[in-house]
Amino acid sequence: MPALRIAITNQKGGVGKTTTAINLAAALGLRGKRVLIADLDPQANSTISFQTDAEIEHSIYDLLTNPQLSFEDVIRKTNIENVDILPSRINLAKLESQLIGELDAPFRLKDRFERSSLMYDFTIIDTPPTLGLITVNALVAATHLLIPIQSSYFALEGTDDLLDTIERIKARPNPDLEVLGVVITLHDRRTTLSRDIYDQICQVFGDKVFETTISKSVRLEESPAYRESIFNFAPQSSGAIEYSNLCDEVIRRAS
Image 1 (cartoon, rainbow, N blue to C red):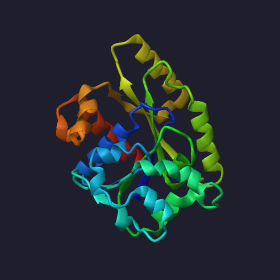
Image 2: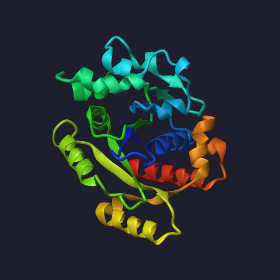
Image 3: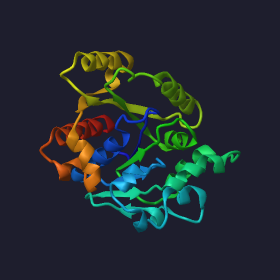
């Protein structure tokens, strides 16, 4: 199976992008896959889940702005087996204004990947809740997209903008970009509303919707505070089972 770079993206906040990035990466690592998390969110929540700021000498911002730095200079080990991270810091928020007018601005991340000799089976790219230049870098660099959509009344709000952005990226800078799938998050099977929203999402995305849904879970919310994936923090929880199942689906679709 060729190496995959999966951008986890949705311009809506609070839909579980970082939770999915961390726990999908952990599940892949537990299956013996070599995994890199690229934290492209200036909030740095993926990074905070593994590192403290004091432990980070260079961040992904430095990698994208300093051509002298290599992946090896920036990558850090995590406490999850087989999983490394390209850490983020709040200074990544300056990237868009700094790159305005630069011809290679949308290609910075892709160029860094192509220059690297590091070998990972999967790279999971955690993106910010916007469709700005940082997210465009992720879409240009990615081979696949995974779109988390919250099972809520406003779930499909903004979906047209996201799909339009994807099509524009496929039209020119990254024609090989594929939607790996849509995962429904924060799902409450007990409510009629959640079931209705699930049906609406399936009508829009068809067979791109993963069979696995991610339920609302206190354990999933708590685990980052302890700097652990759900598999270490609560291995018997519904969140661990569901992210394990999602991982299996991702591997099947990717192969």
